[in-house]
Image 1 (tube, rainbow, N blue to C red):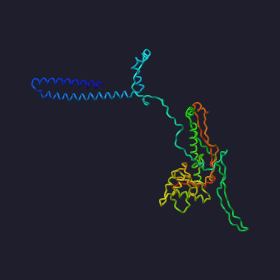
Image 2: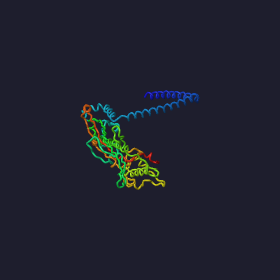
Image 3: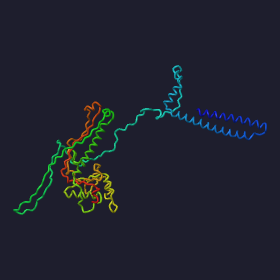
Length: 393
């Protein structure tokens, strides 16, 4: 308010000066019949200055009123209620004697200004949300069995030299030779663990089920990786793609796209007397394939087939789209003949709180683990390769 007072004082000074000049002008007019030009000019300037100062004072007062209203508006309902109670202290104090009390409070209660804390409880949506996990896993295309041993023993034919032939009477029969090799793949453990507090398990509804489901899904992802790409070294499974025969074109026609690659791989298996049971590929490569057109502009894969909701096949062999297969990779195989998946210990989820550290800290250890082995009996029942190498070969 100091600024307003200063402007007002300045305005009063100019006003007084104007009154003085007007008195002089009136006296001159009375004595001489006219007013000197100097007084007229100074009076005009003073009147203009007065108008300017008056406008500045009006603007200043308007601004102060606006700021005052803004401060008032920012007060919460509780603050205004407190002020009203303080201002009406005496009336409240005499309430017992008079039996009457009235207090006016002009304000509107709003959620943002008047409520604090969780006054209105939020709607709770049950469950835990996350991106989907893989729904189809490699084990679903293999023969499966159980074992109570830590290794699987089997014998494979390593080499066969066929001497079978027409033999004349009295002649020495031709000799055939073969060699056998004993295989003994050991089982592999896949495992992980999660630490969680007892309080969290008790307080968060459905957490135990969520951890179980998510843990099992992540276990299956690692299992898929081993079943396809395990190196067979450093305690890993020997995966299907590692053991399979390498793709090598045997057709006389050029290989120009993914469809040609599959026909060529099927021919490679058929040449070894195998009938493929599935073609595994990455979904991205599948959509590349269905987008391909021939020289006449027609799609290689019949569009009508894609819209019927039935599995797409090539020469009767179903296409298996799965993210377990790396982009640019393909595996064509008779999976039932090629290998058997043995579960030594089926994957399981256990909750532990007995160890010393967990007991002291009120923690629970969630363990997800399983043991499995994958003896690959017939590596030639599979053909593995990369599209980037096969196309144009």
